[in-house]
Image (tube, rainbow, N blue to C red; front, side, top):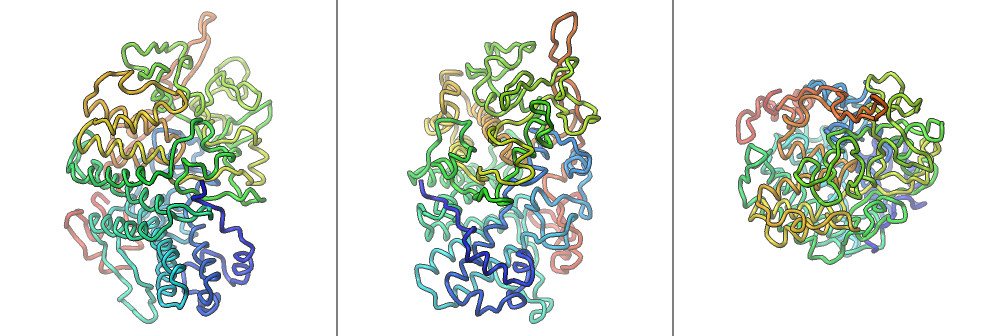
Amino acid sequence: MNHIKKFYGLALIAVLLSALAGCKKDLLSVTPKNQLSDATVFGTESNADIFLNNVYTDLPHLNNETELLDQFSDNSYVGAEWFDARQMIYTGAIAPNNMPVGPWGMWRWARGTNSNNDGAGNYEFIRACNLFIQKVTASNFSADFKKQKLAEARFLRAFFYQYLYIAYGGVPIITDVLNNTTQGDEIYRPRNTSAETVKFITDELTAAAADLPLTTSEYGRATKGAALTLKAWVQLYDASPLHNSGTADAVGDAGKWAQAAAAYKQVMDLGVYSLLNDFGAVWLPASNNSPESIFAMQMTGAQNGGGRREGLYGPVVVHGAVETWGNFEPTQELVDEFSMDNGKAINEPGSGYNPQNPYVKREKRFYQSIVYDGAPWQGDTIYTRVGIGSPNEIDLNSTRGDISNTGYYARKTLDESIKGNDNLNCSCGLENYMFFRYAEVLLGYAEAQNEAVGPDASVLDAVNKVRTRGGNLPTVQATYGNVSQQQMRQIIHRERRVEFAFEDKRWWDVLRWKIASKVLNGPTHGMLITKKNGVWNYDPTAVVVTKQWNDKMYFMPVPQVAIDKNPKMKAQNGGPDNWVNGQNPGY
């Protein structure tokens, strides 16, 4: 399936970029005249395309990131005290002058406005898109080049605006190339409302999708399916309780849900995408750009041109040697969400779950996602139980380096054939980072359609495709019979959490469902396994950390530096988003 091909490793890119006086990020934050002349950068189609390729590389792929979004959520604990999750999320300490920028800076407002302000932000990347659109529109390039490349640039601009929207709500919509030398105070723009921001993003993606190809031989570029999937995701976020009602169980405006369902249905009707039969193979290099992958950052595999996931996230001690940093520490709360192999949740009557033998007869995705006590890994057996001298024995108090605090490690998204310490040194992992895959389309459609009209046949079909993949679980009907809208909502929420664990989705789901006050407030648990009277005892109530949540954190605060610099933002009060001096409520 040739819908996303590697493109930014071309030799021509290296030639052009090596000529730049500054780094890539500096190129995107100023007009290229300070680096190369406009006549050079936009003088030919090939050079202009290199500029656009460079913007693609600013998308925040997380194959080399030390802290991931799942660690902000209730899926994974992070043991390192200096990580943003520990410092700001778990303590409820986010403030306009003290806030995380997100993994890989994904919601950094602009250079110099957030903490960790050593890099360019979304508005620099948006400016690069605006510059490309301006220059290419005015060029004498071919009609075909203009059509596709301008659509790609609009897609990328919408992608960056999407990160701003889901982090901050409404933000200033800027589509021209600002220049403080010639425009003065005209460069300052007020915040657009959340509704206006959503409309801008979705309108842009509708227009881009119309001009993008259905498939492409250049893996990594935007396609029609990528644009429509991003549009559907933004509409799903807008339809969710955070923006649409006020509780996790209220439908809110059914029309918003129907719009999101229709957008996802457009992707399904393209006939381009399908699920791989083997869930465990989805992230392996052999499956790069499979029919399940909709939009992905390509890993070159060259020295420092690939990913480091195996060295960052896997089991720490393997065959007696330290292999990884152990950054993924799956929580007991996540582990408990995996169903039994008969399709039922562990707390449901008839599930057959045995709390003193908790890892038997679980669904296949559990064994393909989690390294638990007694699990195999690279020909070794990983033991996290206490008292047998295992180097991976659970470390509840963070006294033994990178050993897991929860008694679990991650398996999913890791290539078991790569030794972690090798990959940590070379950054040569070959697996792509998928922003969107087809399972998300199916579950997104099912969620939106269920909220709009209830669990009709199309909802059941979409959920069952994901649920039964590779013989994982029986269908919803075989497990539960007829289900209500509320029951289906719970099933879909559990499916999303399990299906997308460690894929940087859970944080946004927790926010948009408005359940953070429930799941990110209070103790997080691990599995403490000790021997008592000759019998191993499994205690899933061992407290790893106690978190504090503030409801204001459903939205990030606009960096105070950005507000102080912008009098038009600072003058904004009230309105549909209840701003106070341009700031989100509560800050």
